[in-house]
Length: 205
Length: 85
Image (cartoon, rainbow over all chains, first blue to last red; front, top):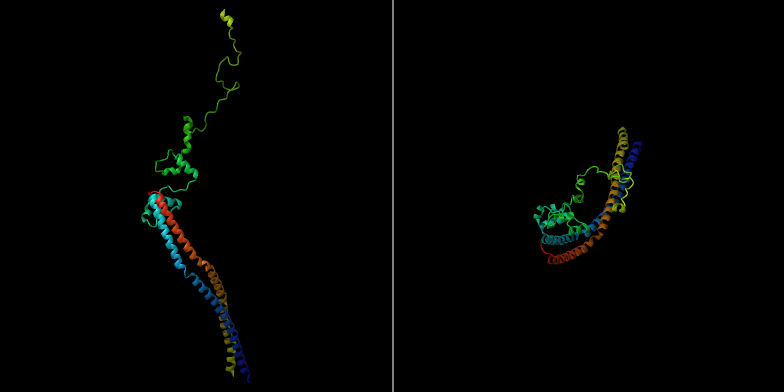
């Protein structure tokens, strides 16, 4: 055999070896992929089986909740009236009044009254007793008894007029006593020996 | 004979490298798929496990139905007790 023939055989053999090596390696990797995909298919099948009844159950839950919402909305509107119901909802969930009640489309146009703020027990007591708290601003019995915004200044009216003008400085209190720079009873007899009263006998004389 | 040597040179210098290059590309592509498939399998297994509690929706549905029934009864009582606006 000539040298050229040997080189040809060696070259062909190298190509075959390369083909065998790489193709076998590829086959092994593809088998790994197949095994992984089998796991994926198993898990996806489990997911499908587990989620199969979800749609029906969720529809049932939503139907029950819809019935509850309709009943509560109807009861609220019936008992509180449309305006107060919207005000209550807007107070509990600010901005919710814009969406309105689901079964009452006209409620979206109602301007929510300011009646639904959550107050402390003390505030409610004040509102109930003296209608002095802001909650009483919407009291159907009428307006509040005093200006709630300037309520803290109401006590100022108890002082003389000069204090109501809010002067920057009021006159200082006078200094009193014998060493005071100004004697308010400027009489000559102050500090002098007391005059003796005439005796009763001389008066008789 | 000269052409034979030229053919040998082409076989070893061109054909063999090209074959090795192409087969190596196929092998690397196949290897790159394996981690992705492994991650997908892990995710789907975790997703399937997360849905183990989906069966509890049946209990939730039953509880919601009972709650709504209670609310309806309570609302009926309120309807009687409280005056209408």
